[in-house]
Every structure is written in structure tokens, then in C-alpha cells.
Length: 359
Image (spheres, helix red, strand yellow):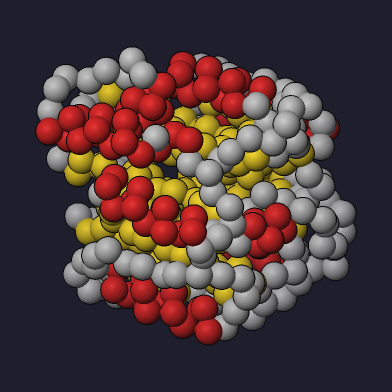
């Protein structure tokens, strides 16, 4: 298999139209070797039916900055099947291009992460999804000399142990992916060296998430990542907060049209989308976004085919934007729909990937 094919697809699959298109795209566009400088364009490929949004935004109060250490709450899960797979320590390597790899089985994601760390790239976003009945992963790696680690586990205690170990090494979580196979919830996290404190809560319902958001904001923490997934018959949320004094808003919309409306409204308030989650609740697609303070250029492209996503990425690349967040949904078992957020590299340095403390 050629390198470009593997970067696109992760492995051989039974022949299909979608597979054939993926192979052709991989060979022609070399998806896995995307070099992204840092665009100022906002695009929306399609909308869905209009629904009611849920918005909660109490007064933005900030705590005194007590210098607390990272805090983690993984709920009441008592599973005891550790499965952590830490990534390798970063080398003192020259900077390489940003890379995007899709449809990787877990073992190949770990192997690819090791290789890319040796080339000076760190995993900043990871997604998991099921294609043709097989769970696979997508990763986005950025050029960085910082230390990075990755861990996958369905054991809450094992995750806490890694959290504490990495905190003592001055590594803080920058991204998590949560998925459920059967009734077992698995958390996959990526850590990066830095000084910003983090808090994390797993398996919260919507009301609890809103309450935790108010509580953490009062203590001087702002949302940076939210994951939504179905567990035990209901939608649960896992969220990460970082210490910051930014303005922050969150919106849960029942249609892309509504989400676009909020995007434009918040842009006018100098807020930029940093995280987006797309999921199905009650038979309807939901769009959940987190916005933070910024005046930087930015881009968004949603529910796109692989062809559309690649073409839009090239356009954003020419406009000097960096891919910072990606979301994958699968239709009819094999048709991937990709959504992405692009931001200026200066914004990335002080938000998604950490930066100086703001006590």
C-alpha cells in the first residue's frame, strides 16, 4: 500500500464506491501530508431542520485565582479494565508539517503517533467513529517541540492515575474523545506540556453540565472542550475547563441554520468558535459549540464530504488558517461527514494548545 493511500484510509477495506473515491483522493491529494500555515472565510455546506436552541449564560464572574491544582471528576464509573497506551516522549526534532490521518485502527494510531513525535509533531485532536462495523480513529498533529502523551482507557482509576502522573510532569490535557462500545465508556486523552490548570468532569447530564459551567467560571475556569455521547439510554457530556479570564459562551442548537446564526452573533461580540460537537439526541442532530474571546480570523465548514473537506482545507490553507478541531459523523455505516474549525495560529497558541497562565 502506498503511503498516501494509508494516510487516507488507514487500512484495506472491501471494495466500494466510497472506498474507491477515498483511494483516488488519497493518491491525488495526499491528505495525510497537509501543510497548513495559519484564512478568513466562513463556509457552511448544508443545514438541517430548524429547532429550538438551549443557551445558558450567567454573569461572567471570575474567582480570585487560588492556584488550585488540576481537578478531575470521572463520575461514578467503577470499571476496572485498564487499557492505557501512553504515547512516546517528544524528541528534539526539527519542525514538520501538520498532518491529518483518517480511518486508523487503534494500534496504527499509536504507531503513527510515535512516528510523528519523532518528526516533531504532537497530537492536538483525535476523533473515534465506526466505519463498516470497525472502530477507527482520526488524528490531527501540529508542529510542536513540546511534550505530548496520549492515553486510552475505560478504567476511571487508571485515567486518574495518568492525570496525576502527567500533572506532576507539567503536562495538561488539551483534548479528549469519549466513545461507548456496548455499555462501556472509553476516554481517549491527549496531554501537552504547559502551565494552565485544567478541570475535567465525565458523564454529566445537560443540567449538571450547565451547573458545573457556572461553578467553574466563578472559580476562574473556562470551557475548552465538550464531548457528547449516548450512555445508559441518555446523552452524557464530558467537559474540560482551563484557567482563564476569557469571555466564554456555549450554545446547543437543533439545526445548522440556528448554529450559523449564533456563530455570526458571537463573532460580532469578538468571540470565536473553539470546539464543536455534533451528535444525535432524540432522533435529531444537535450542534454544540464553545466560543472564547478572540478577534482573529477563522473558518468553519460542516457536514462535508471528504472531497468537500479537502477542497475547503486547501482554500483555508491559502488564507492562512490552521485546522484546530475536527468532528466526524458517519451516515449509513460508511459515509463520513467531516466538520472542521480553522483559526489563526496566534489564537491557537494562547487557547486550544495552551499558553501563559492567566491567574
